[in-house]
Image (cartoon, rainbow, N blue to C red; front, side, top):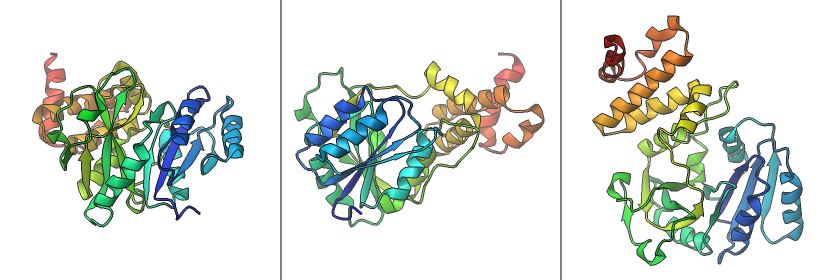
Length: 287
């Protein structure tokens, strides 16, 4: 049990033995060690298990390691929910790492939402390690709407959730699919609870741009049930009409490419009719 720690840093991993040492050293170098490192290995076939066991033997961090058959990062996340027993939890991927004072800042931020029942957690920024940034410019802002932040560079928000709330929102399970976007659980949480957004830059690593990249889209086509679920949630969550139309076109493109024709009518009720018409009309017109 780790009730004396305030934070679980959850790392899902699959064949990333070459990147984990950098992450490990970044955790060892934290100015505050009030956390547990929880690793769920999604069926790695490289030296990941041996590497983590060596870290456990070093006894420089509080580490728990679990290995499961390969099912996808989202199922590894579901597995982590079974073991988290700290007040807060955050996902830190195996090819990312923290700046040295990250946990100390996370602790300070946790105090700002701990006793606010309408807040589910808070955020920080992940930027590419290739960016040379002035850290003194960041960590000054607080806001409760993500659209209030003006991005200077391409990056992404990372979220720290109250564990009791995170456990209410596990990923759905489709046995035949292995890729699910985080929006499937993040959006429902954000619709029910407030998030304290901040502009602290605490994580670095390779930035993989989300959205319409070809690599992402190929993965969505291979995992259409999760893809359509994610797109539906994004459509209902977005306040931007043009974005809703773009997402609807993606939704129907995936439906038409992956679903049986006799089921098409059932999908027409899954997103607002207006956006279905906007998405399908160009197809019927031959545009």
